Structure formats: C-alpha cells, structure tokens
Image 1 (cartoon, rainbow, N blue to C red):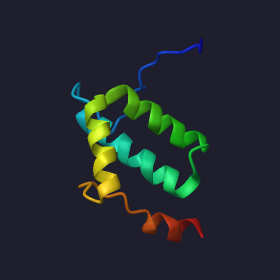
Image 2: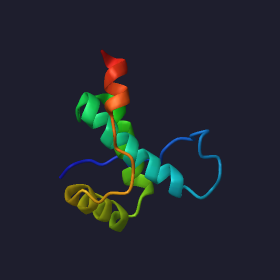
Image 3: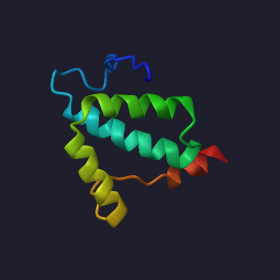
Image 4: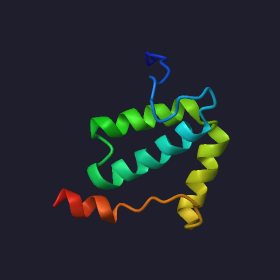
Amino acid sequence: MADYKLQTPGFDARFPQQNQTKHCYQSYLDYHKCVALKGEEFAPCKVFFQTFQSLCPLDWTETWDEQREKGTFPGNLSVEKFQAEDK
C-alpha cells in the first residue's frame, strides 16, 4: 500500500479570497502549459498538478480533460509565446 501525504496548497497572493475556483482553474492551465514546455517530471509542474488536484472537483477536471481531447476546451493553453522566450 502506498503512503499518501495529504497537504493543501499554500497561499497564492494572486487568489486572496476564500473562493478558490480561479486558483483551481489557473493551476490546471499552468500545469498543462508547464508540461507542454518542460515535461511532466519538471518539479514546478508537479506543484501545479498537486494544486489543481487538491482544489478542483474531479468532475471539473474530467470534463476539461475531455474538452482538451476534443479540441473544445475554452481555456488558453497556448505556449508559443513561452517557447520563444525559452530559446
């Protein structure tokens, strides 16, 4: 049996209110942008993953994953401007 360490995300000054919906959504976007640029094993990407896994309802992330697969996801997952900065 695997050992799990439960931990809530730390404070993020971009989201000072109690409602963490925007924090959830932004972390989901940040995770997928980070993975596209750096890969899943990049440590900061794992922080975004843990944050959205902790804050977002499973139903939301499953819906967003389906939308990404179908190409209907409404969020901006474009990484072109970041790729230009990496070079």
